[in-house]
Image 1: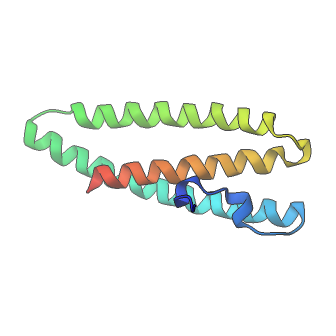
Image 2 (image 1 turned 180 degrees about the horizontal axis):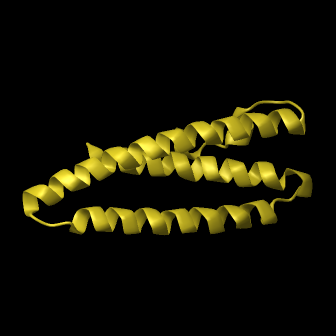
Length: 116
């Protein structure tokens, strides 16, 4: 059974290679996800503003920003845990970055769904 892209392991997607090569690959993936996350959040903010304008309020934008702030705190704490819990101490940084990428992909999907 294949997993959706948000749940794939970014470190495994990088294939075989040295720890340095996999680390570089995971870092590049993370950068791409961060850019996608930024764009998806901007699009979601536009959608929230449009919906607020039709309702005459600002509740949706505020709720989205509160949601994003909470999600960022969760991702930071959870991925720090994932890195610390990794069985191979030398791979803790890769595990942490892979976690950021995995959770970031899922958040992008959520924000894009909201924007549509």
